[in-house]
Length: 160
Image (cartoon, helix red, strand yellow):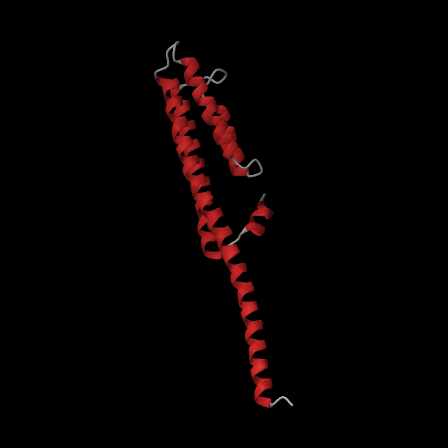
């Protein structure tokens, strides 16, 4: 016959096993979520830096196009401008209204088909930089929110 002491010991072992399994499940789930958030946050920070770099890189050949262009430098400048504009376009969200505004500003930059006065270009460049700064600030806030609150995918899907 099994004594009460043995039953309590077996019950204690069973409860400890169940609690250990529950703890393992939640630890694995938390670790998976943390790894996901860390990866997304890290990639978003890299994306922010790359967009900032691309917009800065784009301004240089556009400035050169407007102020110092020669017949010989024109084709190379146009290639540089179009390459960086396309890279920026590929980094934008086509469903985001603010990103669409940046896309429209990119389309207006000087080139083969768009000519403009230097003053008009200066205003356009300032508007592009301002719009990009606003977009990057929004994205930085998303990074901070993800770092604090974790996975924000359900909130992002409703906006996309």
